[in-house]
Each structure stands twice: as structure tokens, then as C-alpha cells.
Image (cartoon, rainbow, N blue to C red; front, side, top):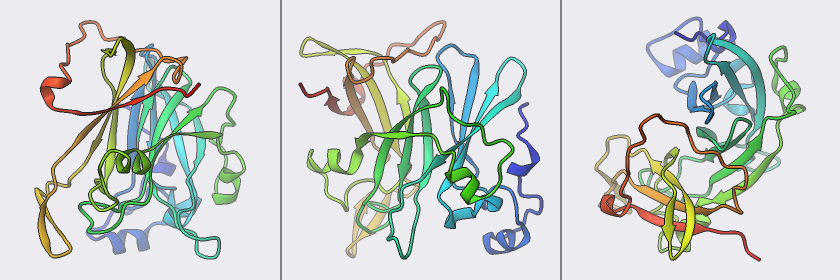
Length: 266
């Protein structure tokens, strides 16, 4: 069992969200705990990211979440890092999305899924579903820091990797048919496409067990969808495949997955 430091826990659980938020001044915000997990390809480190800032770091009104690294050999937390969310509101009235997933590129670089909750399933227009890359090598540890200002000042640098809203709209989706909750990331097997070897990054949504939803008054199918991004080696030059003793073969075409290719422009 791996136990996080007490500052991550809500000390006074309650039956309703409002009651629990009112009863706690520290720990994870209700229903916004450790949301994303990744194991580095060498199998040595577990990396987790919180969905939203801790209560003592400003809660959902704040901009900076914590990333935690854990040594799998000992089960001990080794570092905490800060990740700053985009302001998807205005300067006068800031608003922040959430983190749903993290996946390892290698032992120090990662892809993070940062999103709003808009789109199909919410009967609204999707605005932000973005994948960012981060590099924890040389990042500042924030284990002993508390508060929104302290964390924001030490946030790791992030670089936009894929704007999923733009990518999906360029491939026939609209801002109302893009899944509201893009919540899963995983690297699949390398595949050959038109003579080009590509890493496959699988992106999946969570439909909250709602097979149909209302869209402009019309019952509309709301399936869990899998999107496969083909990524050429020049885009992820430092990519290391996960080491699995007996890898299973995944036939992407047989699963009917939707595929896109990402390659660096010359």
C-alpha cells in the first residue's frame, strides 16, 4: 500500500459535497483527488497528479495542482511538483479546468491532459481539451510549500502538445460533438502507416455511464470513444516504450479506433 502525506486527505468526510467542502480547510477537494497515474518506462517511479488544487492551495478557485512522484521499490513519496492550469475564464474572473490524466514519455518527461467539462455529454460547447508536455528534470520541489502563490511561482514549464478541440474539429467533429470528458491517455504499440513508423497515443473519454444525452432537446448517443494519435519519432524524440514482460498485440484497426497522425512540419 502507498500512503500519501496527510495534507492530501480530507480529514472530515461528509455525505454531501457542500458539507465536506465546508468541513475541511485542507486536503483534496471533494471528488477531485488523485486523478492521473503513470509508471515510468523503467518501472521505478509512480507519478500521480491531482485533479484540482488542494484546499490549502486555493481549491478549485486556484490555478496550481500538485504532481507527486513515488519510489515503487519503497513506496515512499520522493518529490512534489507544481503544475499551473490555464485560465479559461477572464483576467477579471479567472476560471480553471482540471487534470484527468498523465502518461510517461520517459523517466522525466510526461504528457498531461488538461480540460474543461464542456461538449457532448454536457449539452454545451467544448472549449479546452489540451495535452501538454512537461519535463520534471530540474523542476523545483514544492513538498514544503503551501498556498496558491507559493506553488504558482515554482510551477514546472509546460508546452502545448496537442489541442484536441482543434484536431477533432479539423476531422469532422463540432464543439458540441466532442466528448465533454477526455479522461484517459495511454501509449499503444508502434504501428506502420504508409511506410512511416509511428507511436500510437490512445485518447479516451468517460461518458459517465450515460449512453444517451440531451443535445438541443434531442436524445443523442454518448458513447465512450477511443481516438488514436499517430506520432512520428521526430515529434517525441525521447520516447521510451513501457517495459512489459509479455506485451500483448493490439490490432487497432480491428477495434474500429479513430486515428490521426502527428508529424513535425518541415
